[in-house]
Amino acid sequence: MSEGCPDYGAVRIGRSRLGLWIAAGLGVLIVLGVIGANLVYAQHKAVATAAQWAIDGPPCPQLTPAAFQAQPYRPKRVFAYDDIRFARVAGHVSCEEVHAGGGRAMRTFVECQFTSPGLPAVATKAGETVFAPGPGRPATVVVQDRRPRCMLASKFTLRGEGE
Image (cartoon, rainbow, N blue to C red):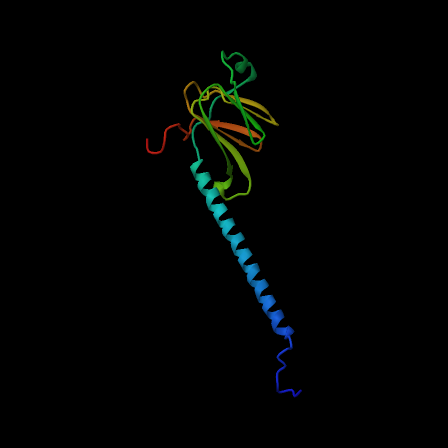
């Protein structure tokens, strides 16, 4: 056969490898694009959640063990959230795991908003803490680095939106 005439049965390895590399490159770009889009979405969601759960208010009084023993009622409504035990006397609660730094940090903390807990109690591996926001008062408890703190404010209600 002469060199000027192509052999139609021959397989050109060079071109098939090039196509394989192009397909693999496009596949990697698509996967990286999907991962990037998911990361951006997750960060936007974390920032929105942190903004929604941002509470500021004066600190709740904290009870000593002796002052807690002197109380006529005890927090009997107990639940666990993320290895933290919460208890309250009355009311309703909503909890969320919130990203620190306004939603931009990888580290998270637990925040629970109460409608009227009476005596919210928090038990972590570091110990138990009881707060006394007062009867009928809303409160928010934040547990960061196993240390709870309580604020006399809450956005959580049982009413629907716009009421």
